Length: 208
Image (cartoon, rainbow, N blue to C red; front, side, top):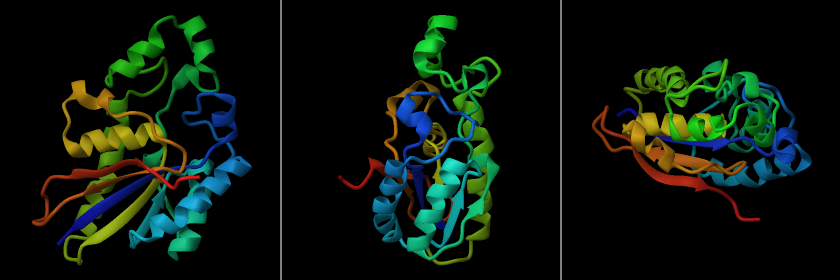
């Protein structure tokens, strides 16, 4: 057997989210609502019975993972490869500010996964840095019973890594919409080891 299921959960709401600002690699804190969102999601995530909980090392994801780990009974391992897309010169700005200084650039970035913000990363590059983590988990769990691993990360990384693991053509990467705070994606596959990933849930969450 091998790694059978991945659950990729986005962090709870942050102060940047509430203000409509772009975060990237900047650290931001969970709001009270963000903590509440993650706490509501944690019991549903625990029902996946994960054997490992790995988080981005950015504080908004790490704090979210801590709350999830308390319910799942798992320690949190941090991995910088799960960080959000580096947005370069756009970090800390609102979309309106980006449009003023880089007219049309946001639309280009949203439509072309190979395009990078000035000084930042493309979605293809984000997926390329995160994919080795999944490959390492595959190797680690190769001889184990069917296993589920939970990754706590960021909306941009989750969609990029999902597209990469599903083997989608680049033209289809923009077909996946945005992720809600504390919502998750499930990717699953059958045996034998190395079989293709299938998406079994996208932007799933707990209703308010």
